[in-house]
Image (tube, rainbow over all chains, first blue to last red; front, side, top):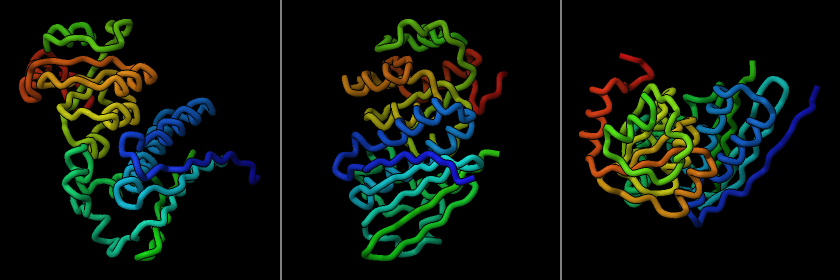
Length: 141
Length: 117
């Protein structure tokens, strides 16, 4: 069975205030589909952190959330600067975000670790100077 | 603890969600770092913070929180209030500082980590 439902969003990189709008929308859509609340929370937190990352580091990008029968996939793609050292970026507390971002409540170096924490699988494809695509999977069973 | 009790304990003013003051909450967390809220919080219904921007409301929404308390007399913007209304959240403001506000709630039985004392 390949029956699935896709939600696509453009993440605006210009405006920190609007960052997270797509995640709020995803949350609403998943609620409507009757997905269990704990799963919804995992998906929306992972996506929210990803969205914030795209706005802070990459000037925005695209987000796709695909609902399959047995899993939900979140694919975040940007054409930002790429991640130089993925292992380092995955360390809790490591951040390259400027202080201006920290004063907004983010940039604590928890974004990528949180995305991994709340999902069952996460893969990062990144090329310095070209961009980053992150795929996350949350299993439904 | 009912949100109405929480409001009294913190001598707080209500910004929105007047019709939801009867809701029960069982735990809370205090932080100005939204990344940490997203990392460490589980099943906490109340967020106390001194940070004022739209991401506070969205973070609370992501965590399924029902009440946000702005400390140190911080005032949310009209956009934030609108977001909170849409998400069905109670928003309060108090003159207390974060430490004092958390302490008062804690000794009145509202603890962290989703545990009841």
